[in-house]
Every structure is written in structure tokens, then in C-alpha cells.
Length: 109
Length: 113
Image (cartoon, helix red, strand yellow):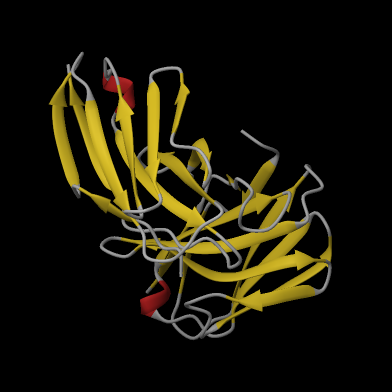
């Protein structure tokens, strides 16, 4: 499957700092997606990076993809308390998405 | 939020009773999914649909059935609820297969006593 595995499982930072989360996967993918989940809510799509892309930006988000290492990273710059959430990566291919357990990010004001 | 609603939002039921959860979309997306989310397990796919009357199993489909008689509605039925099915259930939709982003509903919290 294209299940993503996020690392670390939990991350706690001060407001204003950058947060970096990593993702690894095992099989080939067409693209990799990152989602955010606020407590008690459904997941929200953040960004999609295609397998032929190496880096992508969206606002304060920066995603990298290294298909040779089967890994991705999500960088959130200048974090805010509102960024407190769980973050999931998922590689997509020819089978339904398989979500990992996520990284729980806490941003302390 | 994308036009996805789930009903009910909260339900408490007794072991052995049937339960049906409803997902309704106004986006005319072809794909619909049911997931459950439990502490320590992340989000797990139960069933999904790729069109009216076209459904397939996910990784945790035992004890669940689904139906999709029209594009906008996807029903999840617990045939005989068990305590292990206490969970938060999320519906999601997408315009295409797995390479497309998914839009999630607000979730249904189900407690089986």
C-alpha cells in the first residue's frame, strides 16, 4: 500500500518557530498529499506534490519529496497557535489512500 | 467546507442493534469513502464507492455494509453493532481515484454500549 508513516509522532514548539514533519512510504506513488486535522474535526487537504516535483510551496507551507528515498517533509514556517493539529501524509497510486497515524503538532503561545 | 454532511453527528446505541450512518454530498463527486478513526490506529478505510451501486471493501470492512443508490448519498450500516465499533466515523469524497484530494465530512461519533 502507499501508506505514509509520519515522524515524529508528536512535536511541541513555541509560536513563531518552524515545525518540520517527516513522512516515509514504501511503494511507488503518483503523488503525495498532506492533510491537517484539528481536534474533533475532519481532515483538511493542505497540499499535493506530484512524483516528478521536488519541492512545492503554499503560503507558510513547504513540502519536499524525494522519491529515491521514498520520503517527504512538511515545513510550517512561523508557526501559530492555530497550527496546533495532527498532520497526515499519504502517498497515492492505484489503490485507495491509506492514512498513517499522523504527527501531533502543538504550538505553544 | 465542501458540501458534505453526515448524520447523525452523535449516536449512542446498544450492542446487537443495527445502525445506519448517512453521508450526503452536494458536490457531485464520483468517489465516496467511509473511514473510522480510533486512538492509536489513525484513519482506516472501511468501504468506498466509485459510482452508483459500485462499492468495494477497505481494510476494516468486517461487520459493515454500504449502499449507494444515488450519487449524493452513501450509507454505512453496522449490521449488529459491537463495542469494538465505538469510534468516530468520517465520510470523504473525491472527484477521482486515489490521486485526487479528498474532502472530509465533520464526522459521526458512535458509542456502542
